Length: 613
Image (cartoon, rainbow, N blue to C red; front, top):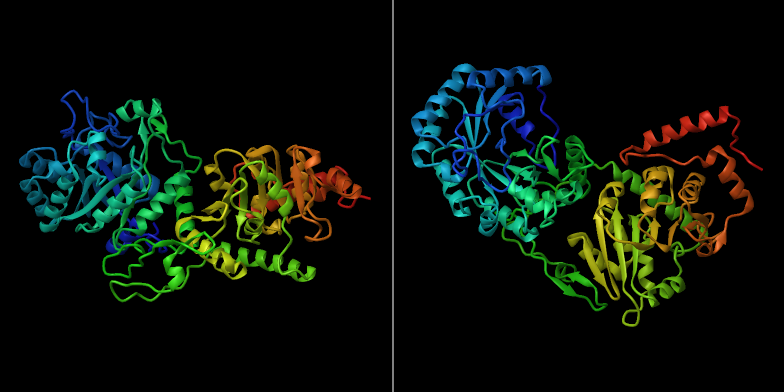
């Protein structure tokens, strides 16, 4: 099998760590030592609120399997599925050190007689690590690497009590320090998303753990497992579970606050589908990990870049600017305070989105140059926006934030104090657009700086919130209705994922009855897709934005400039108006374009033409 070292990720990937240390990846062989859990009664009742009856036992293991059968089954499965030739024992089920020392010694020695393991991991509770047990584990470090996963879960004692954990955080601290003193490698097991916890709690957990002598970390998102106390709370509506996008945001923030040298042993929970109550994700585990990596690269984030020990500590204070918007104090003074000499800034990682953004911005610049205007005219006029604001607050969904600054143009129409607020929800491709927006909108520089730091900012008469990443995924975070949708990219084929009939149909569901969709794009496939989802389609300002941009609404009277008759005939009869498709919201640009070419070829065989008189 391939033993090459995997490419570096924005976090300390565990597979890469194993390959660098052992010359090849080691595959975990799940083992149940049969010790049960001290937090459960002898008949199996009780336990932590989140723990199912199987206690993290691997799905292929049965309670009646002896140790030898477990190991043989696990090794055979790893060899067959992964062509594995390196193994580590993974004592994961329940509490692997909940036994007298002599019994634990006998089980572990038996384990090493069955199979040659280069490493062993024991998953356990911090209150099941007395000194004699830790001393025994230290003896086994002479046979192989020994890792202990300590079930910390959170640094917040109130949460530990709520989930009926049976120990406090101080217990975890003592266990971790004792293991370190005995030379046993230690990893913390953490659950993000426990009921009642907020970003303040997650960050505190990261901060507390970062000060401990840990060698690695294992992170899980909260899974609600059937037939658990947590499932009862879920069914009663007492808390919610994160979707993949919400978890990714918290996870990235957490990774940035822990030491960069900790290998990350896991990032996502695994629960059999028939036992999982919530959350139900759209993305598979590999797709989520790919999404996480892309998001970190596009934002230029890496594990540990917010870890404060021994590195530059930027103290950011939010103040109010003269125009009333939020501004970080550092944006006003341009000074930074450092606890230590700042490290040199690494070059930004390559991003597949940056060349695309450059092309889109270049195309928009060409349109501006041809028209002789420094900026394109607004897709929504000041008069229309002010009329809408006079009737109450207005919510705008901006898809592709920063490509051409259309959303920021709306701010000039806001007159605070005597009208409703303007609330902009932006789905941005990459934070890299912010630097260019600062130069194009200098009076919004402070607001944009705050936006890049916090993801939200205020301005006189409203606020703006941005979610970075693929808008097809980020739109799943939308709640409520919007009055205006702006699709910023003018080049449809360069960013075709945002102009498929499937994505447009999903966007249109958020529109109010009298809402409008506007865009500088005029592609026939885009306009036809709008018609297909029940929209009346026209232009924004004929002759001013390329060919006038596009405006669509469910009501014809909301479309002020109709399309020419010839354009309408083309949309109904020409193969050039065949819409783009992306039913699973996962297609690449090339796959979407190829699919459309196949459809167009079939239509040509049926007699459809490209040119229509």
